[in-house]
Length: 244
Image (cartoon, one colour):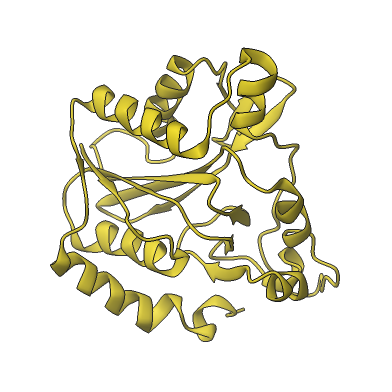
């Protein structure tokens, strides 16, 4: 398993990178990244019914559509994102939750009593959701990605993901709201541990690298150039993001 950490905080770049690594590579890998404040919409969702667009504009929160299904999520610099991309294994379902096992292993090693939910999401006692996931499947490859709420601005999350004027005549896949909590809050309340995002990210990366007996790498210049091409031709375009 190759582990790649993105040096970009651009949601359009990182979503383009996921597509590139899914479509143009043939190896198994884990892509890790942190985005600046943004709302990431599922491929079959209606933005008007999921997002307070005025609030996002006023608060410089970018809205971007991804290639996977699932619900709308909020990203910011307190949110670590993971994306598993792998070749299909004959006889193994692409839709089970096995891809979450390394994440659960790492988080439990850090003292978090994580459980996997029925929608392939991760929960702390309460229950509080700390990670949602979505998938994109082709004939040969699987992509599963998700979020880890470490120190996300939950007020902005709630406001950005609360649409004011829904049009229920527009067909789309609605999000399923859940009670959420930051991992940092759990560390403070339950473990009396003060941990910042930079330290958590470092611990997570070290543990996931140890799990796979792998080293952390970054994208090379050739890959970055190809990713930027996908980004400019798709993810930065209003036609893609606001398609119905």
